[in-house]
Image 1 (tube, one colour):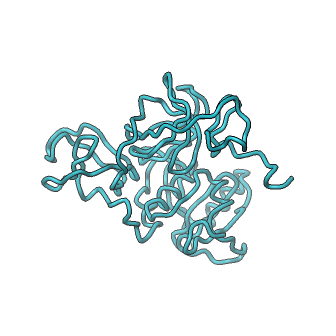
Image 2 (cartoon, rainbow, N blue to C red):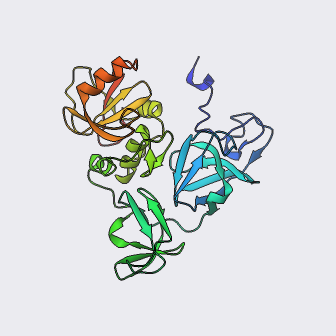
Image 3 (tube, one colour):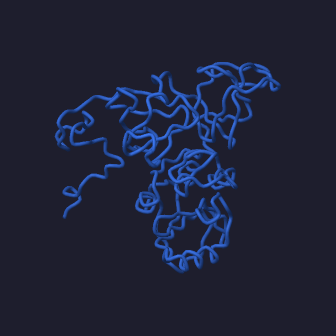
Length: 291
């Protein structure tokens, strides 16, 4: 089977038997095609699921301010594609708002409160997770005024175009955050989200799931190669980040948190649990997509 004959990955292809994105006309078959309605996430974290069901497992989460191209936008759910990583699914319409001007900043701390006024003793009216996107429209008394209302401490923000110098240090900011399958926030995330969020802070694109990351990120090293800081270690369905030659930072279901573990300990534990050996050791060079 040639690559052209392979079925598209529906996690990143906005196509259903009854509906597909207009730009896919001629590439996939569907009963009808629709242009995208640009929306943005209005809540701290929005669930994205594979079906329009409030009890469906999380497939992904979208952060405040991230864009969502909706191809179906009626009833209680919108169906479409996330701009950040191309993931396709259903998002509650209550979590979305019309997309306005582009965000100017990102939240650079694990979490930040949103205040009604520029006063640290005022009671917060909301919160934002690491990586959330906001548009700043002014400053007052050490706070940034948000276009959506409210104030965030200015030190908690970084300009969106200002890439972090050390993406591994960005991942370390989330040390101790709880594990959550499909999660992407400081209140809960999974192994591949840790990699994705940290690379995004450094201005580097990254796919969502660990199998995508294994297939697309970095260049493969020989099994005997000594790990370096920033290398990625893949197992079947899992990924971790090397802090140095011996220590692994990863969000995992054993610790149920982002944790630091000796690589050899992780290897042995994975084997004992039936997860198998390391399937790929990858090194990110100048461009995260090089392999």
